[in-house]
Length: 362
Ligand code: ASP
Image (cartoon, rainbow, N blue to C red; front, side):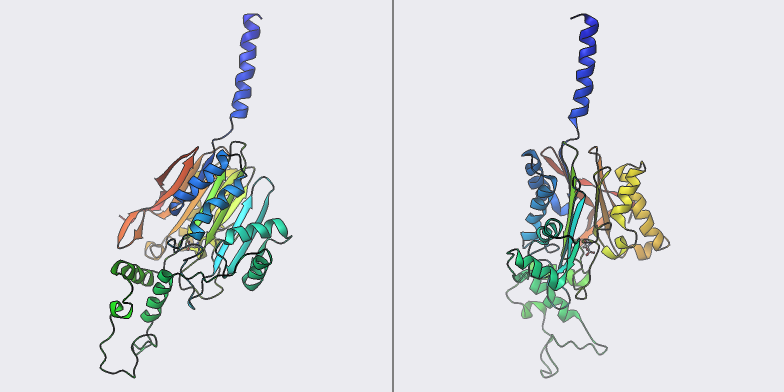
């Protein structure tokens, strides 16, 4: 072999190497998704499908009674019933499935996948979604936990009519009885849980998990799953199961998802907007910030009104570049403000990173 032939050979091998190297296994999720990312990345490392990976990841949160924004233990609607929303998108086959207002099933993400795989529909809601799930063997269960039931009861006690009366507290038939302190009303609850419940009442929380995965072959999938807004009107559906709002995956471009105030996301079709932004050349961070600017524009950039909610976007491009951006730099946790973060795992190395943000509370 001449030197020239050898050099030509290594150049071809180098080019082939670059072509086959592909992106790293990458999973991006909301801040509550550190463990979900870990589970999903382990699936990818074993060569499993990207949708199997993200669903296995978010199942951790759906089944966790202590994640009060997703699945089992999620905060209920105003009648004390947990209603769950979820959707999935599978990049390689370009298919999607969704369920909304699903009661009694801990893992709506799995039901959404079944809608995708076993029907020629995209979205099932309410009673129909539950019947469908049961026909595939899902158990109907009470999704309220002691903790979420307590928060709901505390919320009921906080409601007042014009004269300050509430049917759920010490009644008119008991004059002179000292107004019952929460500790007396709920002697079983420890102080920390009661303080948490009061916080949920004062600021009805939003919370959700979005999880996006990319494998070395460049395949992408995503899922978003939630119990939605606490104390919502029964039947209220947020952005999480709305394809194009709570989640969008385009195998040619990348994926995006959202958590936070669903109504505001639906009004700009956030996830679809972000993927289209990336298609037209924006990087994931710029794509998310542009979507947030559209949200702010809907409020004429009025800070006082924008300050009343949180909204977060996550984006993962086909080449592995990722970002997350939040409307606000900080969010409330317990009684204090903390930096808004998101979870990521690249090839087994997981961490929380600060999100980019549109507005600063400072
Ligand atoms: N985005 C979801 C909703 O609006 C849940 C959340 O609040 O994060 O229902």
